[in-house]
Length: 535
Image (cartoon, rainbow, N blue to C red; front, side):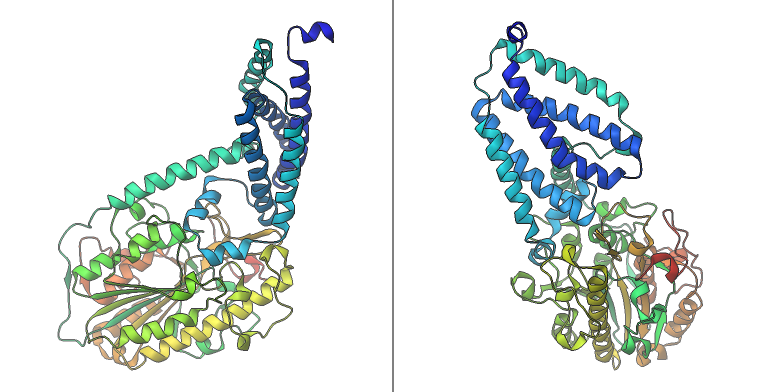
């Protein structure tokens, strides 16, 4: 051992080896077991790579003195937090996971918080204390030799990396890389938003002496079609909507499995197969403004980020943009019905062609916080601090109660429009996962039908139906109720029903045109209630 010590820093090597083995066992072993527990060969390779990368990273940090201690503390504490979210919600670490941080708000953040996070953080702090207490001294020239060896091992280890590990690199390098990419993505997105192009050509609206019309889009959040009585769910979660004269489309695919992707795609010329225009072009809001419509965006959603988000940039194309104050109130129970008084104010404005978007918080994150006590029909409910701590039964009961509240909200919107010359579109940005640790939604899960099957319904007031042109359009749409449709149809259907002519319009995507084609989704197929396992 004395001879070995004359060529390498044996004490430092021993310290880093023990540290790397411990970190690999505590952090990467449970993470990769979650991902690859049914793929033993992939799991074994992942663990080998984890150890090799940990050896290289921690050996490098051991050479940096005080800076190394600070970085080591940051790695252990951040690893604890990331591991908590990965294991609690079943998320593979990705740039999309970190990108959610930029677009979240106070209530979303509180919804995923759990006291268990303190346990993980405390473990990370203890790990930090033990590691720094035994931190090696000042390096010498012989301390560099193992670093070169570990760097070479990292380069060679890539050859044993299985395809399944693509984008799922070991902690801490994996999540640090994803975080860096998410920051880069935010800067890129900011530039794209600033450079969004106006849609080409003239914009003309055919009014033909009709009364001023009101077009309303009630855009919900995290609402699965298979949890609505309207769609055959065995619980009557939509008693009021079931009695309303709605045109219900049986199979509608969301434009995305995350809010940002879905909302930006459905309101632009983007499609599920070709999403690029979502961040490169102005939305349908601007086209309505150019056609002489008053445009109003009312929401009880918001973001903690200081910069402009893609959804906010579309919302702010409206002449009137209002956020309900409960968004920024810590103990507020955000409910869809918050938007009804705001809608009343918008409807009291001087009569004019108007487009109104109601962007509600729906059943998002912890559905137990999304409804009033009067809607607590199913029990036991998810009353714990975080949905991650609730059983499947509790979460589903709270979710279904929140759907009852949403149903009441829809009825309130219809009640306010029934004496107007109005048409209402009802949909949600995406669905939700309600079982086991795999809960919530994530942008990359486009092949999950429980995230893609959303309600899509249309209500037209008696006054609106009196117009012969509108009546024909509504009949065209009604004939497509059993055909698959998608959010691809929304942009063009809004223009079509409003009589707005523009080169951006595509009749084959307008449900009212009589020429609409059935949607063929590139990611998944929705076949019925049995596929998405509601309970």
